[in-house]
Image 1 (cartoon, helix red, strand yellow):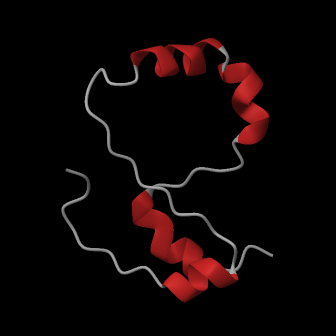
Image 2 (image 1 turned 180 degrees about the horizontal axis):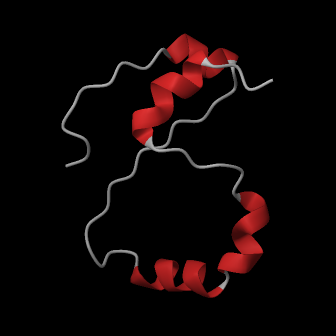
Length: 67
């Protein structure tokens, strides 16, 4: 599952920059009701979603300052 390549993540850099790394694993059809609610109220959820990046871009994001 997931990406077949190994990825090195600098935990100190994640902590110092206040970043959050979220992985996901789920079985198909496990969260049907929750996903339906997210779909139904997706416009209301927009303010809570700051940014999403592909996991493959994580090393670049950790190297480049955002300020």
